[in-house]
Image (cartoon, rainbow, N blue to C red):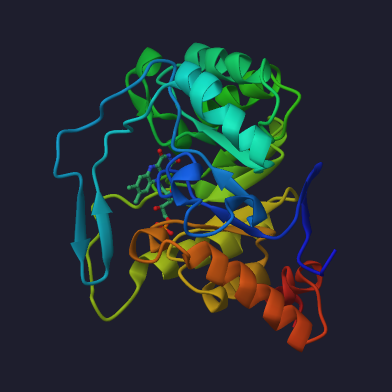
Length: 289
Ligand SMILES: Cc1cc2nc3c(=O)[nH]c(=O)nc-3n(C[C@H](O)[C@H](O)[C@H](O)COP(=O)(O)O)c2cc1C
């Protein structure tokens, strides 16, 4: 215990810094840069029932204000993840959050059931920013009823914590968050990629949008909120934590600095020790002052 540990529902994390889905491979790709087992956790690249090749290149584009991506959810599929990637993560003692996506509730449940057969998965994160093909292609995460339906179905299929990743495109994101909480989500993660950004090179719009959404969600639900969106430094991370987030995920920043998440972890620990405080005390600190 060094004052960095946090509790997300039933899950204890050594520190509040995770790496965001799609920005850190399956975890071990970054192991040569630093010991990824020291992270609060890694969120895997989104896993589907079958492997997917995704979109043809070019799939990412660097802009002065950030990175645009159109990966098309390329991934090895849940079976390959369980048999090829997970054993090493498990041996190394990495805290693994399996990010999953599907185009029907039934497939979300099938992926969850496959993961349930394995040790070494600590939580499941639902990427609900994808269309539900059984109800005319409406995104799960845009609609409180669809989001709650998929959350409830997954909740019933696993003993593990279920985190639901909010889509910034939901008309009423607070209603979606509350619906997921009622359906049994253990935490909300916020936010997924913003589509069709208009980029202003002088303002980091993504981070500000994410910070506002995290602030609002923390006021709307009682379950923990995990923040993602524009976090590149420990100072950014502390802003989100002080806004009420119980942990943070580092996304795109790992592309320009593979050690970004480590710097965020170390910076938070140093801040806590210099200020004789703990992460737990900083969570929501800006809300009460
Ligand atoms: C290249 C790339 C791939 C991503 N893949 C996924 C994914 O598979 N599942 C998911 O839930 N989010 C995915 N995301 C979204 C990130 O996890 C994160 O929510 C988003 O990038 C905002 O955080 P950032 O500003 O720190 O990058 C991806 C993002 C990027 C840039």
